[in-house]
Amino acid sequence: MIARCALAALLYASAAPAIAQGPTGLSETEQTRPVLPEILSLRERAEVVDRLLAERLETVIPQIMREEGVSLWLMMSREYFEEPVVATMLDANSFHARRRTILIFHEPGNGEPVERLTVSRYGLAGLFEPAWDPEAEPDQWKAVADIIAARDPASIAINVSDATRFGDGMTKSQYDAMMAALPEEFHDRVISGERLATRWLETRIPSEMALYSGIVRVAHAVIGEAFSRKVITPGTTTAADVQWWYRERLSGLGLAPWFHPSVGIQRAGEEEMLRGDTVIEPGDLLWTDFGITYLRLNTDTQHLAYVLKPGETEVPSGLAAGLANSNRVQDILREEMRAGLSGNAILAAARERAVAEGLDPSIYSHPIGYHGHGAGPAIGFWDNQDADPRGSDLLRPHTAWSIELTTYAEVPEWGGQRVDFRTEEDAYFDGESVRFIDGRQTEIALIGSDAP
Image (cartoon, rainbow, N blue to C red; front, side):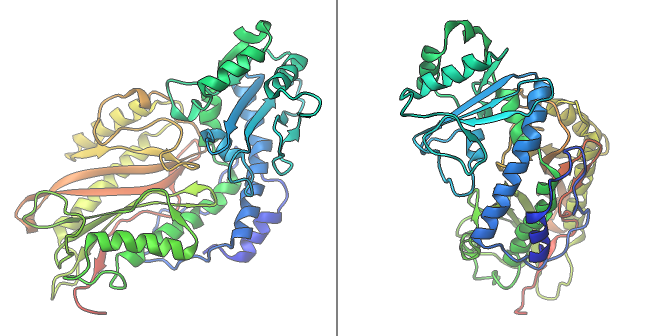
């Protein structure tokens, strides 16, 4: 559990260690129906979010700008139209950009601190230095041009990209306005900031990882409730009932899902996944896909449960073996995730090994963090198990992942029916190994057919 005392220590601790140090709280073992951690109040959450953001601005920004060799990084958002990067740089009390919010990072070199400027009418909780006086210079883009000219940067990164949506936040109208105000001598210094955008979003700092295990534990605990007789009455409850229970449960906790939860039913004699108003019956294999957003970090989990028939006390061995197959592919994939390899290369190596072991896998893993489907290289897609342009980026250390995949197997107890054993667990790559943040499911959860 996330104890309040531990969170208070985190809030008021001194500056966090460098990015290269490892996180705490990772575990290979997942608890069965874990206790729900205490949920922070909104005020406490805001304090955590702002502290983490301040730390990230102090550590991540200088590192990525220097490693990428960028002198100045400029981003802008308009109210209710926040680009993905700027949205993560707003303080906890700024729900949206105000009017036009322009952020500038300037790396002066010679080991000097990176400047953080806001060319905006409203401040951002002291995280950026105000750099515009509208009374002295009413033209906001002219003020930006003056700032750039005074610093004479060798490169000016803006978020434009065909490769990733996360690095494509500069709109055409604002680009035109910026370039019209910028002296022509600087035009050929404008470059894409897509790598900065990706690296800012995908990098996880130790202080975030110290919290992430508790965040994933919340998701695991809610799934444990959903897959129990507390929520499911076989013969009465539908798949859709469980989906909407998730939504109501999170609302009551003051949390939100980042996608509508999924619940599916696989049943002996039924070839397709059953959903919606289908009633859950004894003997069904249930699947869920569920993710929450908490403290600006996201989870993404897929678990399985079996509804016991009268007289049964355990899952049929064929179903248990199917989940074990998926666990094996998880291990293979994690072993193939090495820094500097592309998502496509990792996919090909993991599939080759899994198929050689007689498994029937489909791998579609992705980064996670500020976004559920986060910035960074994809490792396969459910509808494409070959190389994909979205998998061409390289795996970098200090990134979080949803290890998402499935295997298919014929289940003897179901007359040899081909069954889909989907699994997804969140994990962390420290540069050497991939470890699960709050363990993984290795046993199919059991739901009694009789009242508890």
